[in-house]
Image (cartoon, rainbow, N blue to C red; front, side, top):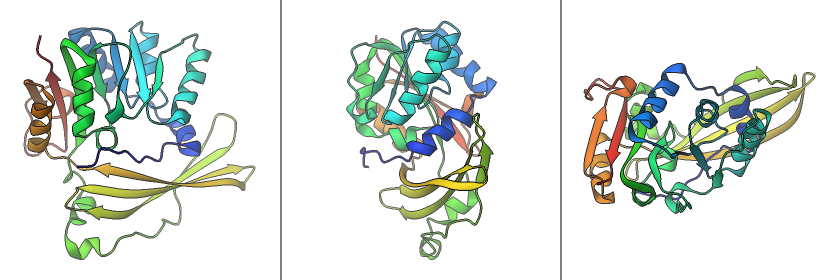
Length: 264
């Protein structure tokens, strides 16, 4: 399973995340409760433009951020400065994680398929204080029927997809518009790796003034292999729940949350 990440969160895509990606009240409540339970300082790994990090900082929590994208971190710093905040932000890939502080809590929200992997889990384990906890969520490979069908040879032969004619076009705070269109390029069923491509278009006064294309590689994970990887990384106390509701995972769940503790 490859650890080397490849992501599309740069340039206009990073700006899109900063403008339009907002944490839900349920997400914030869950991660706030996790930090309250296991303690501070906390690390938001794959923190991006601060979708979770900034609201938690505003609430007075001691949380650092780490992301592979300098563009995302720069936008996070800008928003933090406007809020009168000065977070510790680090530009590192998760499989190279080596930060000056140890943490009571590390969380990875909606990014484990990009930022996860065996070495990333080992690095998280080393970065935790004794008794600390790692929490992350994953969307299961069979959660979306059209993606799951692509594992069949006859469906994989339809890749790469054509670009959609239109995308998700939204007006930014300065009046410009950003449109995102994405497509699937490839699925490697042995490595369980999706490769996707995104096209970001910047519109100003109805005219296209900039366009970017980026590629993302995303690992698919199943529950049992993640349990093995967590055990191999050193974690012993591991719980798996069906989303953010806290109940034990079931076969019909489309996403899972893993909570793994480092021994005291």
